[in-house]
Image (cartoon, rainbow, N blue to C red; front, side, top):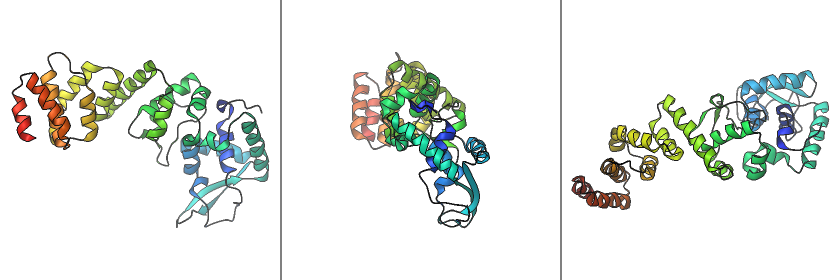
Length: 291
């Protein structure tokens, strides 16, 4: 076993490292088991699906590294399968931990994305895993983990429902390491993803960020009813970022003004009203009366 970087740590090894953080649990323990020792808990930390966890746990049980049994979780009346390291697994996990630390990493940083160094993590990813990770970071809303390509190192965190959403602050740190071309490519992927899902507000945001400006203009025009009757701060932010295409300046300024009024952002509304005045648009007085 030779570990030099994060990608050298296999999923099975990550599972063992995670379980090693919860010593003192054995078959027979029934009412004090933490959620972290369930398949869902393990999946959420290691960053893989519950089905993947089940397969790897079965292999680890066959090697006598891990033991599983049914127990009540803390505060729960129902029983679930939980897992802990066998003595043999504890020894192996300690050896893995030593290798990880010799490579200049910590187990907590390796397993907990919020605690790892973004630049070190970014460099440790293969090209394919970096592409998948970038797509996950670019998203503003949770999606099923299976909608993203698989990763060899299990870097995408997943909750117990199989959904993935990287915390915004953490995602922004990782995205700061990417080049402009990659960011636009990932936003373009996200725009097409939300087209298939029918989420027009998310699609609009990613169209703008990907540089697909003409498509963003036309989508905004088709979202007139959403803007007038269900304005939101997210929608207003997107409209404020759009660069109006030639011939659509009045329309876009009016839509942004209406969204601003709906969100009670009177400063933005006045800004758009002034733009409508300069464009000699009759909507200028209508917007001012609403303000």
